[in-house]
Length: 143
Picture 1 (cartoon, rainbow, N blue to C red):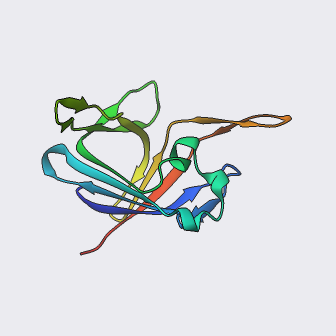
Picture 2: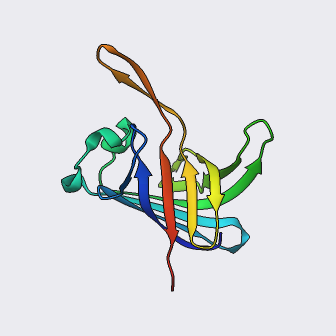
Picture 3: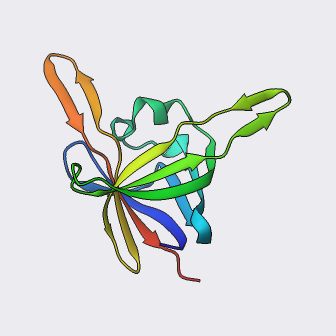
């Protein structure tokens, strides 16, 4: 898992996969559980805004995360869970605590990492709520 991983494609709410053109995401895993996650949104490239969660839609720009990661095995989940725990940020006299990010780890091999994000319930007018599990496929950067 050690190395640099770039987001290649994501699942849509209809179940198909598309290249990630509207934002880029890079995961960097280091020895001793150190990691960083950088997400850069490209609002001019929002070909299909329905693919984005409400949170993503309002966070244009760059979002970065530096902290630790852990892999948890819970037999009741069926998959291992990748947990990102951000470092605290100190701004003057304030302490800023970012949310932890949790992903189910579907598969990992030498050049491909597949993660599933937390389930989203997407309300739709005159239709039942859509239950959506976004799948992200990352490719390992060769250096």
